[in-house]
Length: 466
Ligand SMILES: *Cc1c(COP(=O)(O)O)cnc(C)c1O
Image 1 (cartoon, rainbow, N blue to C red):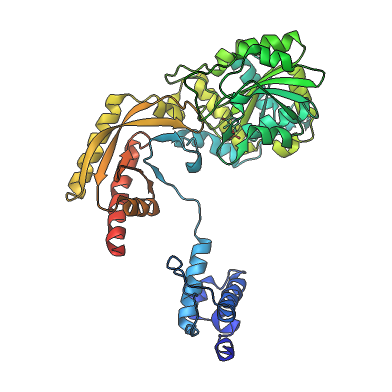
Image 2 (cartoon, rainbow, N blue to C red):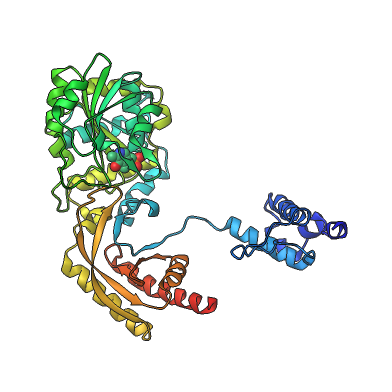
């Protein structure tokens, strides 16, 4: 064992190795070499049982790799390190607001409007007329108030931040009344009960998981009560013997008892596609105390949490010191501003999420036909055909609503393995009944050539692995 250890090369030998010369100017090259040598040292001192899955060259070191092969291993590691980890993907899942894939995407045309502002100084927190400090929240509030006919508006980092800020400011050490049917968990372990506790509020659960009545809320009201909240069920729906109280009735109840009503809408939307759910404007017509929603769900903009409602309450939110930690950054603010203006001008070309959700079936069918023809011409031996499919809004919105769509179904042995290759090559498919489905819903015209190229790459990868 000792002779193995002593034959490990010196750090300097590797530092000056020709295979690493193009990485010599990275200050951390030495650290990477040291760590690599250390992990080999550890393997010699306490070998781990070999598992079939780990293909690390360091498993059970019987002899020290040569200097050249060590240099190549470190070269690979350096290459991986400096390659950007974030990369574009083709979304063939048929889910528009895939949280794991970055939710809403932006249009290049909109980004062209935002870019010049990002490359210069701007009046983010500067009042030009007065020559003194201004407020970053002021830029969008009058536009939001005009659009949604409310007293005031505040935009924060995301909707989770909006919920925390509202609870922490207005229900700290006091009770927030919520139906048991709405104590939801959304992805990324955001759970309403935990968020309320973490924000300093006390959750007062009412009703049963399937049914909550107005009297359940009314009976729970006491001196401790601060907020009556409704939480959008987001990514799930109840069917059968179930009932909930309309927000309208909760507003009246809150008003009667001098409490605050609040609706966490989750994914609020403005307009531009067909759905039976009420829009933000529909809800604002009820004159609620406060509502909040995400910027990058059905709104189709950037990550943001938008709070609308009564001026008196929003002034309190603005005075909370937490706001500094939850504030929106200038990039998001600029993108949100452009999205809101696009809605005003009904310029949906600028909002890809809305374009996608309003696609008609004929367009989708034509695009699927075109993709299939391209595929059959390029890779004739591949078994492929068009099937009907159901696209989804995703992102914890419209769980019951399907959007009619089409997919290319590929029949192939070992669909799971092929799906793995497709993902590595940059396209995310659905695997259904051991077939690969590439849904056309989130693939635009400009994606069709890249899709074909990616499938070709994935087939080569599959064959090389076989
Ligand atoms: C998505 C969602 C949130 C969190 O919003 P983010 O913008 O992702 O932080 C909160 N509440 C509900 C009901 C949601 O659907």
